[in-house]
Image (tube, rainbow, N blue to C red; front, side):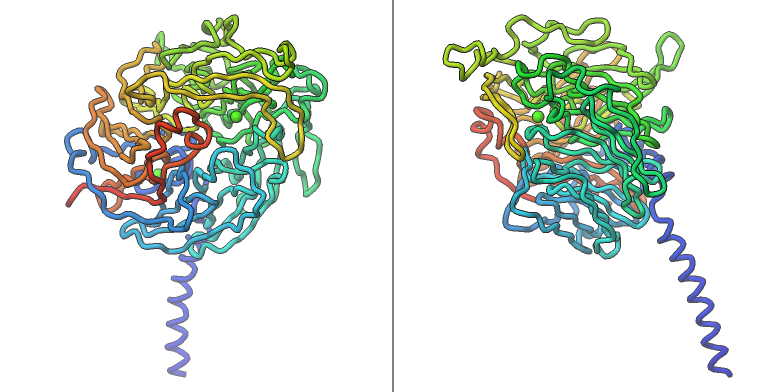
Length: 588
Ligand code: CA
Ligand code: CA
């Protein structure tokens, strides 16, 4: 009896402990945690430090006075034989960092010590077709799951404590050219993903999956003419054709292989309850084959997270003939004008223009060039549509004497863009956007092409070249109200990493030369730099633990530039590859 009594007492207390533990574990990361992410400085549980993607932290222990004392506390190697581009943004929750590496790998790391807790390595088939290196841009966290997309176009949910697979879903067929590289977005218990594959004539789409079970909720194609679907009680139900009609802004059947890949993922604004996804180039690149606006390519789409319906669209490059591929992130922000709060959103497009939109309805507020040279358009009209420049578009191969190669033109920006995937940041203190951009041009010409499943579908040739001897990359501080450049930092190699800004009046980013750099957010003065041993093409984060502020960034040169960069690739071929994550703090 005595024994029983004692063991009962023991059992009760363990049960209580187990219950509270189970309660916590079951709840895990909630929608509320994700919505509050920007203000909760002890964790980073969303891509972009909050679903709006501002990449702004209210932390200020690190500031223009203290940042010079910043120093590394640990570095963790992703290992593996092949070190390639590392474009991930780490996440941090309860002292654990979750970060992806090249070749669809996920690591859980003790955020204090850099010790590995587990690694998940997706076994990729031989036939994957990533256009632009074997990169990944990070995980999503929900409940007790760590969720990411793979290069063979699957979503994989792992248990956060063990790294074991909880569910796995095929999003698309990698043999058609689809892959996943973006960090998934979490909205109202759903995992929202886009797809990559615009160079292979795929049909872009945005899809929602139940975060807990992995069951599909809705699918929304981003090429006009394709049917969307929603699942009700397990049944697939038609949910309206994207754009209302099949291929209205496309000739013939070209909409069936129209591209418009949603390869960068999206942001979410809880105030308007809209998700914003960019769409990539129309396929093929040779625009003479597809007269028309080619909706919804090179656009921003506002999508209802509950139904997948397109609420509004804004097309930055109608009839894109340069692979301007405007997937760039649309960041929600408010500003005061004429005594009123404007609910705006801004995007810096690959085509060289910066746009400020009304995020409630997609109306164009203003736009301006953010790069030094734009050859293909005179400017924007009062609706934000580009005014095409005569002779700016590469010639039609059908007009060529040999019938092979159309007239070549010099175009700026190059197709790698005034700004590519690397996310900009918005400071609520300076009210400036910090835009990682590049100054480069290309020779581009068109060639005949026809669609073949799983083959590159371009109909174009190109050579990218630098425009200046001293620099290609330019980190710019841009005032979204005036279009004025408050300051700039010029970098020899092209910039390819994301930006972070903080209440400490700092702007952090990295460069392919390997440096993590910190700038004064108001003046652009460089206050700190540290070489991580390989190029930085990922996005830095900051958080605090026990009253100390930390900064982390992945290091590993790669991505699209070495593969597609022509003369620029030659200029930076001395840069060494790598694969690691670095964490910094101030000394105690
Ligand atoms: Ca947080
Ligand atoms: Ca493209």
